[in-house]
Structure formats: C-alpha cells, structure tokens
View 1 (cartoon, rainbow, N blue to C red):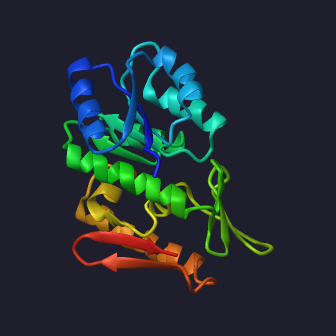
View 2 (view 1 turned 30 degrees about the vertical axis):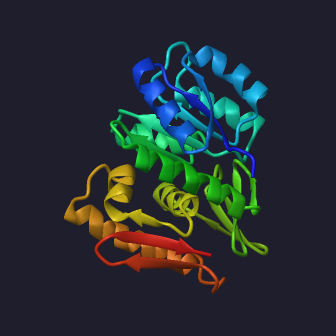
Amino acid sequence: MPEVKVLYVEDELFLARIVKESLESRGFQVFMESDGAKVLTAFRKVQPDICVLDVMLPNKDGFELAEEIRKMDAGIPILFLTAKTQTEDLVKGFNLGGNDYIRKPFSMEELIVRINNALKHKADSPEKLNAETVQVGRYIFLLNRQVLQIGNEEKKLSYRESELLKVLVLQKNNIVDRKDILNLLWGSDSFFNSRTLDVYIAKLRSYLKEDPSIEIITIKGIGYRMVV
C-alpha cells in the first residue's frame, strides 16, 4: 500500500519538525512548507492525498490557500490548524472548502485521527461531485445556493440550516459534538441556543424524510451523527 502523501504547511518551525517527524514515524510521507506563497507550487509538484494547513502564514494565509487549492482539486481533504477560536473564522474555513479543523495546541493522536478520518471520508465519498455540490443519499445539496434537491423538487434552506447540514455531511457517519455545533453556528452553547439547535435538527430531518436511508441520530449527551 503506497504511503499517504501529506502537504503540511506550518511556519512555526520547531512545531513543524515535531509534527513532521511524528507523522513520518506513523508511515505518512510528509512534504513540509512554511511560506504561503510557495504552497501552490508545492501542491502541483507533490500532488498530495491531503493538505494540513496552518491558518496564520506569511504572504498567503491558510484560508486563501484552501480556496485556491479547491479550484485545482475539488475533492482533496483540507484540514486547518488554527489558534483562532472565533466562530466567524471557523465558518469561513468551512465555506472556503475546509473539511475539518484542529485548534492549537493539539495532540499528535488527535491530528492523526483527524487525518485518517478525512482520508476515509474521501475514499467513502464518490458521491461528492465538486466543491459546491454534494450528493446525500437521493438528495443533491447545492452548498453555494443553499438548496436541497430531490427529483424535480427544491427546498431553499436558511443560512443556518445550510451550515448545519454542511457540518453533518462533512462529518458523515461520525459523531459531531453538540457543543462544537453550537459554538460554530451560534457562538455559544447557551440553553436558548441549545433549544434552537433542536428545532433546526427537527427541520433537517423533515427535509430529508423522502429518503429513508438518511438518518440524523441523536447521541444523548454528546451530539449527532448523520448516517447515509
């Protein structure tokens, strides 16, 4: 089995060396870059299986890079490493094509699990048509238009409905922590926002009811899992 090629972009060189050596010890082939301006050239040369991008980089940040990488390869997994905790930053990352993110500081175990999950989703997801269109069971989810289609029927989603569905789809078959959803989409996990999330989950279930193979399962006390 060929080694997984990781394009790893990080300008904190001490951290970068530790992460690179740790990944290589687990069998990954790591190509490291520290300057945002050089990443696209490295991407074309390496043709990696996954990109792990720090958000804060010199000359060109991780968000800009993700947007440009998505234009070259709509299906490659992109994982952000970020010290940022603002909800708008995380939403921006997902909107620009990120599949997942890890907050700094992080453990190597968590990073490796996230990388393997992203690669598994890629392998399990031939239904992903491009960066703006995803097939979910019998439905087509048009991310940029915030539209859910089945047959000739279209359902226009609100911004938060669309963002919630996007999070569940990106983490399909995995548990998504309820607190992470609340902080990402509402900015806090307050009681009021928690009850609002329940309403949105119920709405999505009703929108997806035409395909019985799709379930949004509540994992009590933890979060949700979308199963297709």
